[in-house]
Image 1 (cartoon, rainbow, N blue to C red):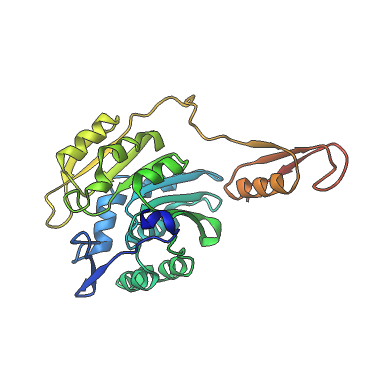
Image 2: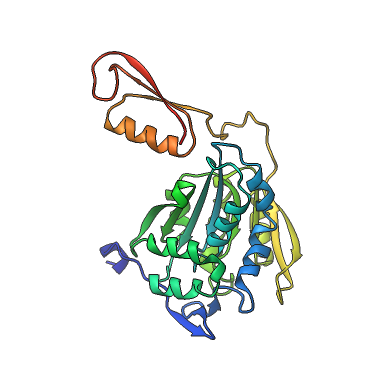
Length: 300
């Protein structure tokens, strides 16, 4: 029986450090640009997805979902979190960040890598403090007082997209080059992106490989080639067509929960923390009481 079926633990990244920059021994590729990884993350992922302006327009109680293939050092996540803090004006809005990583960094390696950017230090420290154990599956982490929710799936990318339920507003396709890490870029994984995307979702990736572009176009994305970062000649960016507001995948404006027992109350609290108005309907005066009633839980 394969080892991965015997233990919930997952293989971690094997690193080589060159001038303070981590490289993957397994894939023979760097985790970020040697000259300025933070600028690269902003250029390749935040800029084409227009995150600064889109964050500004997220309404009170609303949310924005970013999905990523290849968590790596967490640099893209921290860069996005920093932008959310700067541009999301409504304090009750929530950033959801969904990412998958097959070979996660050990906590000490993550801390060492992110120490390259002092301006991210407070965010990096909070991430490191709540960094999950090296076990397979989904790990959900609350950050920034609940304004930021990280879902980090440790495992195979196709397994992650099958197991997780979400609809992304924007995508970061990272995870080393297709030549070095072909499993991350297999057609099945790229095709599954469409099913996890909202109408009008945008996408950006550092690669410009024609096979990747064709697979994303087959999934319904309109793809464009644009100048890459630094010495990289080209990169890809794209979007899905926007659909009418009546699309059935649009999020609910409010939720009704029948039953104010422990499970109902916990669910109501969780949804309220995400900014949704919740109505609890129960045959009791309140949780644990005994006469009919309807109770409203305000967004938090």
